Length: 316
Image (cartoon, rainbow, N blue to C red):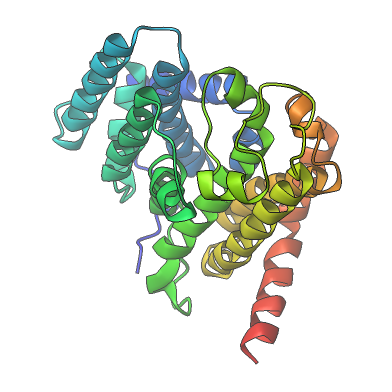
């Protein structure tokens, strides 16, 4: 069973300042993530902000305009920093606030820091411009950049004592990460194409006549773009259904956090399904009031209870 920590030991002023920096980064840059972690108690919220700030740094290196070799070098420097954190070589006097916060969070919670190594591996795949022939190929990438984040987050959340099937919690967290990442890929299909990246499997693109790519806001001539999107939406929904088995294993506020973040992405998926061509015109998003509603719904436990009833029916 994954250990649950409710209260962190007293943190020093430098550590608190480091957490404040990470929380500021999260508040400024995390469009959907921040809505979920607001529902967590302070120690868990701080730890999740430290994970986000480190992950954001890795993503920014991969997405930036630096030369290929510079990106690779900076990613390996970031990996070296992670090794220092893992080895206990970062203390509160370190000048890097993200490293200080992450090191403290890893002392308080059983965070599997190897997941951040996987994230770096995934971003290196982006830097190399890798493409994916099949869904199994794409899953490798998604597990690096999102599934690993699910498992890292579970280290902060913990599972409830006596939760049935808790040994499978990391598997469900990983699957939920895949669902979120596939939703991201659908949402960003045009933006990624403009950046020279294609994530959807080549087999799927060929099946629906979309191998030419998405460089234009118009549907490629002769392509069944709506069919492609609906096919991937069904795949994402199946992943959400499996990943949501995690919710009953979490305490109320951790479950609310996961339900809020996943709920926002499920609503994005609904919008994409209703109007597939919208993703070719720009990024599909939810207004802030709708995200807030999803967060309140998560805190009320509605999503967790709904998933629990559905799981029971499926097993009956």
